Amino acid sequence: MSNFLERPSVQPWARVKKSQQLELILASVLPTVIALFVVNVFGVHGAFGMITVFLPLQILAAGFVGVRRFGKKGFGDSLLLVSTISFAALVAVLLLSVLYSVIIKGFPALSAHFITQNNVYVSTTTSLEYGGVGHAILGTLLVVVLATLAAVPLGLAMAVFLTQSQSRLTGPVRSFTQALAGLPSIVSGLFILSILPFLGMERSGLAGAMALFPLMLPTVARVAEEALRLVPADLRMAALALGAPNYRAFFQVILPAAKSGVVTAVLLGLARIVGETAPLILTLNANVSTNLNPFEGGIAALPTYVYGFISSGYDTSLSRAWGAALVLVILVGILFGLARVFSRSKSLKTKSSSKKKGNK
Amino acid sequence: MSQTTTAATMHTEDVSVWFGQRQVLDKVNLTFPSHQVTALIGPSGCGKSTFIRTLNRMHELIPGAGLAGSVFLDGGDIYGEDVDAVDVRINIGMVFQKPNPFPTMSIKENILSGLRLSGRKINGADEIVETSLRRASMWNEVKDRLNDQALSLSGGQQQRLCIARSLAMNPKVLLMDEPCSALDPGSTRRIEETIKELSSQMTIVIVTHNMQQAQRVSHQTAFFLADDNTPGGVVEFGPTEMVFKNPQDPRTNDYVNGHFG
Image (cartoon, rainbow over all chains, first blue to last red; front, side, top):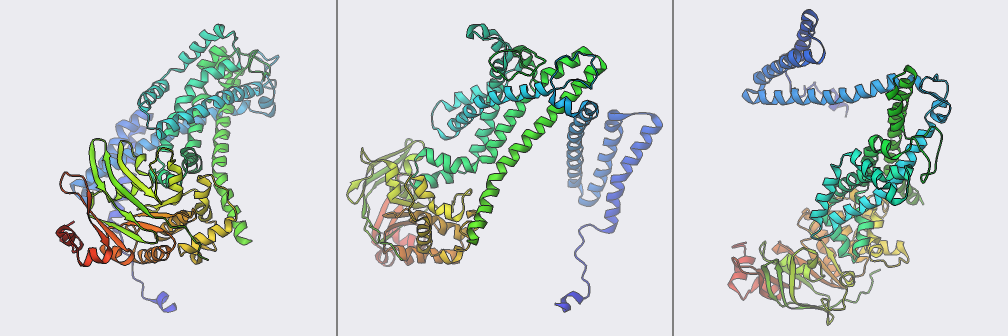
């Protein structure tokens, strides 16, 4: 063993020579330096400067190194590399800047009472020491849960129909689902609003859930369909060959294999509706107090709360709106986290239980 | 240790198969006596995999599949009017070309999956698991890790797990569709040994592309062939030694000696 360690050092094959490394570093640093110089001296700023100065320089530099190292092929590769990295960075910047502005503007309004209290006795100019979004959090949860209770079972049933059945109706049902996915949310709200009198209902939490339902359904159905489609046909065949009726093959083999994808489908459906504003403005009767009865009375939701306070324009009401927006973002984060934990905990459970049984 | 199984005799009468308008098999008449291993050989596309799927009614799961003729299990037509395909598949197990253990289940759960999937009560789970794994000659390899995920096994072990999974159902007949074609020689040898041991307990039908394998494991052999644009059929059927050493049909002779296909 020691012999092996003391052996005269054989250098591992170097993929990139020293001189090439220098070229790489220069190609990564020089465009940035030049771009900074140009931006400062000539006063081209921001995104405009990025696109007109830095990006062409970077492409040129990467192209130059690419051609030197790999010949003509190298140019295309370097072009692809620079553009993919740039656009991926652009996406990250977009997401981070949205989060940044929500956090910066919403954080001052956050406090324990902002999350727990409701908005009774609060006007647009009331100081932030009073009132909060507690009623809107509960309202959003209530409306979203109601819509989910209807949309998830039906969406999953549609996905099962689309993947497991050999019916001729799968084509029409799939196009119908896709068409429904393109339904503008305000149209959904208007539709529910217009049929409320026929149902003998007033604007209420239930009406809001009904307006969100057609928005959530196609998302759940389509994503769950993709998840179920990814389960190899082999597994279904194996289950049927063991004498399983179709429904047992589905519930014991196919659904467990697609579980994480199905959870993702529910999550994306939730994400689709939790921030919906337009249908809720039409179908909920905005309220400042806490109301947990979905059948009658006004009810508030976070998006309608944000909309209401951002429209009035006072500093305090703007702060309240941003604070509510931050609470909404956090709520979505918690929902996603919970669903992830839930979808993972089961496989962890089987692992730990297997250890227990193994020891005994 | 070994369970006594009621091996069954199977035979087919004029089995013809269609996919849509295209006929792929024409009037296959074969007999699979109990306690015997029957090898189905022939070039790709001759319909032998299709044929083996008609023996446990897996064929009808393919959209557009059509069938004529009868398949008898101990004298009863498995395509009879009041026969449920699910009951047929409980009695006639199947092992596929690619190992397909259930990925969300442990080794133990995979063994018991057939009983659960067919809705039967499980009495003495541990004993069933041990017996089935012993019959597939892999008990010693996995007895300490029965609760590990099935996918943690090697390819050869996965295939033997699939065999054990079928055996847990105590089938009368075991169908194997090229069970070793995705495996290395060592795993192949172990599966062949398993087949030989099992033949004393049940009827086995195996599709194989490997001539040596057919000679090693089978008692009788059926040679399938499909001439250009005609449906496939059985060219020669008889004791394995006869088919390989003294074939009656020149086409069989050419095929088993590697002259075509």
